[in-house]
Structure formats: C-alpha cells, structure tokens
Length: 97
Image (cartoon, helix red, strand yellow):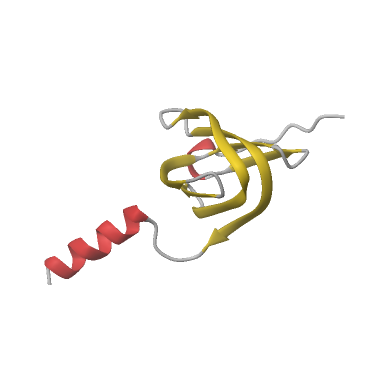
C-alpha cells in the first residue's frame, strides 16, 4: 500500500499532492513569492513554481525545509536556471574579476 524510499535528505525534494488540494513539499530553502494564485520556492533541486487558486500556507518551517499549501493546485513546474543562492554567487564572481 505505502512505499518507502531511501532519500538523501540534504539534496532532494519530496512532493506529495493529495486530491489537487493539499501540497506537501520537503526540501524548501526559501519562499521567494507567495500569493493566492502563485508560489515560487527555492528548493534543493532548483526553483519550483506552483500555480493555483485560493492557495494559502497551512504550515511553513524553513528549518525543516517543509511547506504545506492548501487550495486548488493547478500546476507544478521546476525551472532551470538561477536560484537566488546561485545569483549571489554569480554577482560575487563578477565583483571579484
């Protein structure tokens, strides 16, 4: 019935979506944007964009890397490219040239 996964917690994300209404995300580093129709998270695996309607944050613990969102979840998308941490490294690299 249930599955057990061995996961490297430091560099992994775990996403559980229940009935398109409850979203649990582990591996969250930072919340970059949060509105009732769009959420952008910096995660261990990159930037995660969540689109929906009437979304609200039920639980947030950046220390534990966890966010729980409730609402009408319509889309989850990972974006390749710079996270805020990587942008800071690029800026530092340009300054040191």
